[in-house]
Length: 323
Ligand code: FO1
Image 1 (spheres, helix red, strand yellow):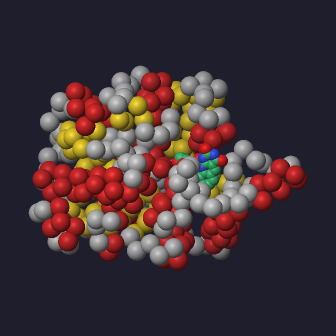
Image 2 (cartoon, rainbow, N blue to C red):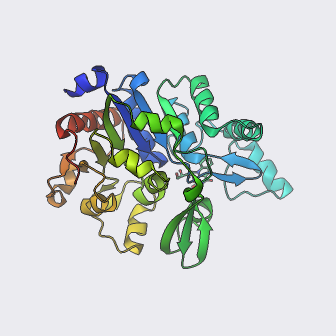
Image 3 (tube, rainbow, N blue to C red):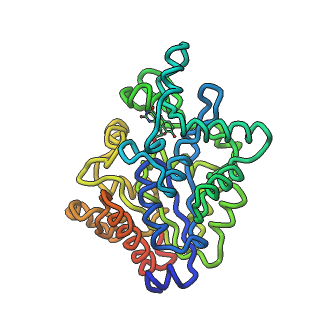
């Protein structure tokens, strides 16, 4: 099936995504895959309660990025933001370590109210995506709370305290996902991954430890991916031995992993049929499951080109190549 054929031949695509890097490829995929055949499964391990509000950073980064509302500099929050709420929070002694922009705040307030009324994160996310004019499916990995906890040399930290408040300074010992044993993939995620016409499962260039593992840690999720007949194509989040963004290189060093693409393939432990590696890492791409591509995305064209590379790779990978 050609890449166009895959995109136009009815093949469905499911992408696992978290963080800024993941959202970039998700945007590229929306330009190549018809929206009624594209589903983005998003990490919810970053979610937390802040100032009484339920904040879902990775879902919001995907919502804002796919609707052209994202802050291009930070990758999170909204463009053209104002900060009067935060200034007033400082004035009244509220918490200011986690910045909530005025227009971003509306999303957290509306979501918190609907969750309190009993609506699911899946339904809320679907409605907001529709209001933002996003036609692709955006699915929280689970509707149950799963919180990424980072065990460090300074004790256990909830993800945002580690990532934002402490700026990833503490040394990581382990990463856990509180609540995972009691969580299940949503029915929508389950049926997307079990679709008979699924043409590829894409693992975006998100942080494997902080953004993809919280998805795969949900009981049953890994089997849904591993058991699929569709090829699994991952994009390495490392380029030139460095993370494109965020603490990945530091975390891998602290966990004793070499900063090479093989460490990414090993981490996914047989789940991935092909790992796309940036051309500048050709010397480290000897594994037959690796293919070279331009994985660094600075422009929209780069995002679209990488999405095409992923689909092209999937259409030649064929099912069952997994170990
Ligand atoms: N990241 C920061 O580094 N500093 C912040 O103040 C901050 C606020 C914030 C507010 C809403 C939101 O959706 C994301 C926000 N992020 C912030 C990013 C957040 O920490 C995400 O978890 C990361 O993007 C990693 O996925």
